[in-house]
Length: 149
Image (cartoon, rainbow, N blue to C red; front, side):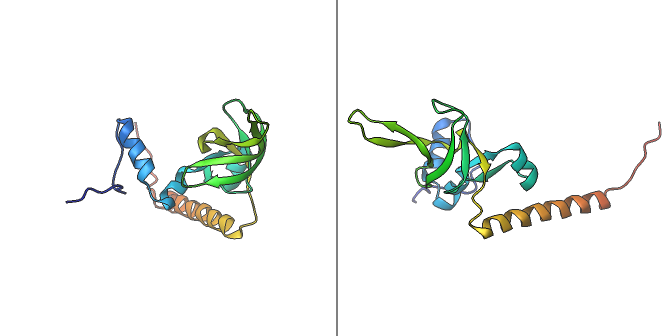
């Protein structure tokens, strides 16, 4: 019997090797979700979400490392390697050539979203509306009990 490389039913483990294996063997459509960053406070209110997947063209702020506090647009997002390059943030090699500095998505904060793709925003709006409807239904169906002491 051949053992599976990846399983969607895997719930988690304390062991770091198993976490690394899950991430390394994940298919691209799941790795895409790992490439998500937190939203700035105004965007959180607007989209009523805490984080969104990064895309090329999103404006981000670096929160950790040597480039902390710097901002720029995402120039390259590599889903397979789960890393992101930001325009203008480059390191100089010994021979003088400039090279992209790669960032982990968890170290970035989205300050403005790339609005070129209308479907991206529509899907977000649909999810927000669905959440609001669910909240209304649960409040309407909840019994209104008053406890007597």
